[in-house]
Amino acid sequence: MSEVVRLAIQKSGRLSEDSIRLIKECSIDFSSSGATLKSQAYNFPIEILYLRDDDIPGYVADGVADIGIIGENVAVEQRKNVDTVDRLGFSRCRLSIGIPKGLDYQGPQTLNGMKIATSYPNILSDFLFEHKIKAYIHEISGSVEIAPSIGLADAVCDIVSSGSTLISNGLKEADVVFRSEAIMIANPLLSEGKKKILDEMLFRIQSVKNAKNTKYILLNAPNESLEKITSLLPGVKSPTVMPLAEEGWSSLHSVVKEDQFWDVIGKLREAGAEGILVIPIEKIIR
Ligand code: ATP
Ligand code: ZN
Image (cartoon, rainbow, N blue to C red; front, side, top):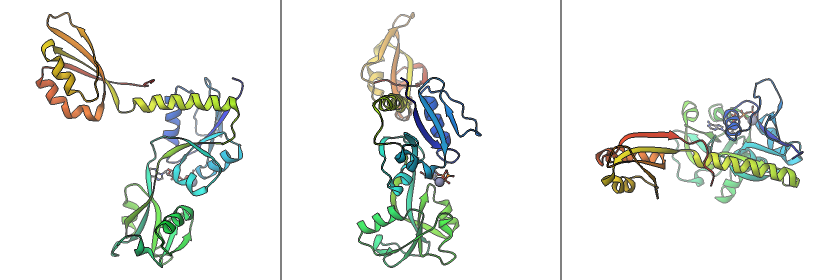
């Protein structure tokens, strides 16, 4: 492969750390020292460009970068000609309507005639159109949540994760307009060579995603309770069972979802399971 795919990620901000972690989890090594604007991976044909997140969809659409990692909120707002090729599951947030906390919200119609401040005029106008609401959109680029208190707007439409910024500005979250997570976008006209590199990367990302929240479990159990123990473990179809040196005992190995596993741990021990080991899994290739 002589071609190199240029991958744009956010230089510094809420997407950066998880974007870098994802690439490294794909066993792609590169130097990620803060000062550089781009770096070439040592063991995979990609070059990483560090940019402001807002610039990424435009650069990918223009072919300056081939692919990029970006918040879906920004990609959808900008309406650039890019393909969404994967959903990455991190940097989850929502774009919500915030109204003064004393105001009664009775659905989107409450917004009729209001002036709403936002940095997301396109997504907001789709929401208003869908609910047949006539409101005025006041576009501002930052500090949206202070707009009502300084008399600039009646309501806001802004990114929320915990809601604490709204509350500290005397607002409450009234409605969710859009749910976002990080996505991988690509230029729609990649060469065959670049597509192959992208496919290899998406395959690795899938293996990493498959392994998230999944653990390898090993335990020892008396032979007579193996069936019971297998039935207690969620999602386990056919565990590996190996005899222990001690007569009448076996070791059981399997793959389980960690969050489901904790519910049954007590029952497993009641059933005679001992020496339970839970080990992280790095990748699952299906
Ligand atoms: P830049 O300097 O690159 O323009 P920014 O200030 O525009 O950065 P960030 O605040 O770093 O952007 O947010 C980047 C993206 O992270 C947002 O577009 C959104 O998709 C997501 N995001 C924003 N706020 C949160 C949050 N509170 N929790 C999780 N993800 C968030
Ligand atoms: Zn930005």
